[in-house]
Image 1: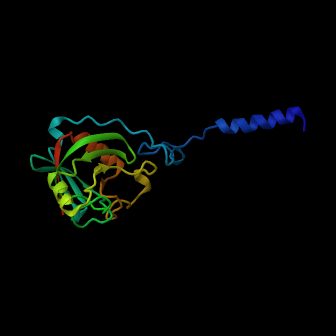
Image 2 (image 1 turned 120 degrees about the vertical axis):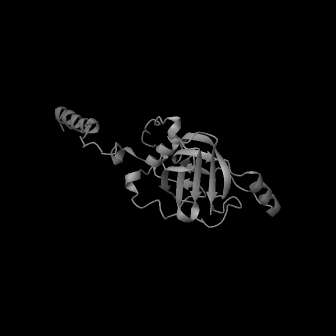
Image 3 (image 1 turned 90 degrees about the horizontal axis):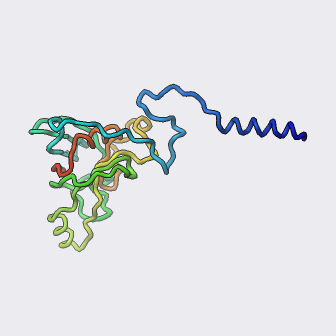
Length: 196
């Protein structure tokens, strides 16, 4: 094989490595599917700026309806279909029972680097949960959050993925676009009540 031919083949190969294809922009602003893998999440949009008058002062979860409501002064601002723990009936009793807690808590920590897009931590377990677990001789569990989808999945890929399917380990899951809205409309220390 001549030296010229080898250089020619090498230049063709290398040009293929750097050539980019032009795709029509996604209407939802997402990058093309090849930009995703199980280790890297696509770039999150910056949080929205929401005036205090439009922020929720209370979050209500109705487990039996697979619904979550953001409320202000008793009025519903937003409602969302949600996924719960895989064992959705009844309160969370111990670590690993795959149940979503029931009771009154606070949203006390935001994580912008979650394995599930973004997440807001719920203050489970409270004193009642801890005392109940101690009486039963079990660990009540923790790390219960409202979160988006796993980092290798995006909203438009999961039509019908959320409701009524319950797939979390006890958390409350919404679509990523909804998580962005919740993130912006709910400040830390906002009370949340999770009802059966």
